[in-house]
Each structure stands twice: as structure tokens, then as C-alpha cells.
Image (cartoon, rainbow, N blue to C red; front, top):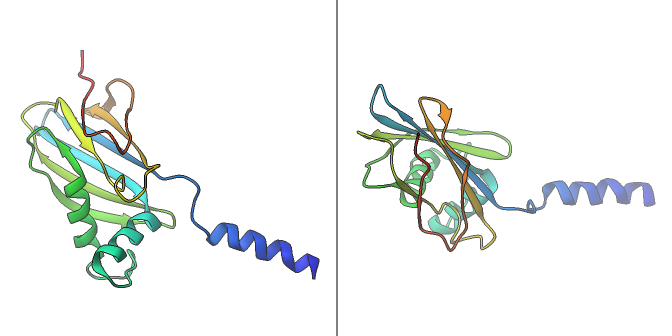
Length: 157
């Protein structure tokens, strides 16, 4: 019996919720196309849980035909840059993470942002934003805690 206990404990730990809530956003201002290109990466099970709660039904990001539309709508409510109008252009789901791709016209690199994805649902959620210009990082990553709203972004010198 003891030798069966260890696999059961390991399975429970693996299947249980992860210990931290984290999201990351890469924001690349493309100076040639004058567009902001975003890649938002979140824990798939956290986003799935939130969408299930919002929809009041079961939902799997990699199987539900409405999942991409719902995930995009949610992320577009929780990610913002200055007065830019963003649109979602796709979603990729992997074992542990979901990646959403957004873009929007931007005549200049944005000066401030808001990244509140999953922050209302998980009080320990930490989101980071890495600003880039033409694929090159600008300054350090900007952390967003649940209490944070708009924050200034690093600018290219």
C-alpha cells in the first residue's frame, strides 16, 4: 500500500492548482508599420476557470468553439495602452498556458498601459509587461499587481 501512496500524492499535486498566478505581455511597437503588436501569455487553467464562471457552463480553451472569442473579449477588457484600439488576431493553447495575439494601429510608442488580466479573480496575480521597439526590449519589465491600474512605460532613448 505505501508504494501506491506516493504516485497518488504526486498525481494530486500535478493535477492540483499551480502555486502562483502570473501573466506576461510582450508589447512591440513596430515603427515601420506604426502598429503595436502584443503577445499575452496567461495560465490556461486560470483563464479557463474565469471563463467558466463568467459563462456559467463548462468550457475548455482547446475544445470549445467559442473559447477564442470569449478569451479575446476578456483580454481586450483587461489590457489597454493609452487610447489605442486593439483587436485580437488569434489564440494558441498549450498544456499550461494560453497565448493571445493582439494588435492595433499606433502612430508612436505608447506612453502608458494597463495590464489587469486575472487580477480581479486572483488577489496574488502578478503581471509583467515588456515593452519593445522593433523587436528590441526597452527598459526593464513593468510589474502590475492587482491594485495597479495605469503605469508609465519605458521609452526608447
